[in-house]
Amino acid sequence: QVQLVESGGDLVQPGGSLRLSCATSGNIVSMYAVGWYRQGPGKQREMVASITSTGSTYYPHSVKGRFTISRDNAKNTVYLQMNSLKPDDTAVYYCAAGKYYSSTYYPDYWGQGTQVTVSS
View 1 (cartoon, helix red, strand yellow):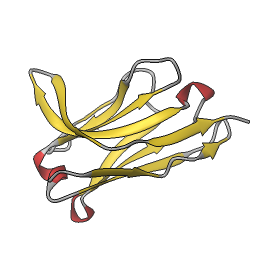
View 2 (cartoon, one colour; view 1 turned 180 degrees about the horizontal axis):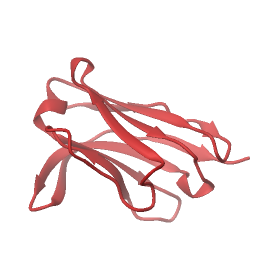
View 3 (cartoon, helix red, strand yellow; view 1 turned 90 degrees about the vertical axis):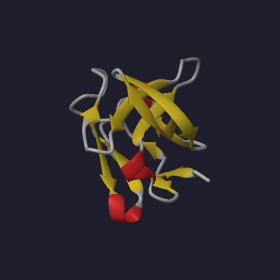
């Protein structure tokens, strides 16, 4: 059974940093592409980063240069380092395990989410 558990969400001031963790069951990080998504208040869920089983990464323009996704295969964990946080980054952050087909990501499994609040 595939399980993903996020942690690391917190209240942080604008300009601050956080590192989120996505702990996975089994050999997920070497078998699936793992994506980080977020859903802010009144907004649609959006992808903010992904990393494939071969290490290729993707970031949308909104977070490029501020967020970094990485993984530790030995720990079956994927991380999201978030720097220079803005109030607009406030959201519930989710990790997902899935596959890329023709450059489109299809998540198959989701974690329960972790709250990130950026506020002074």
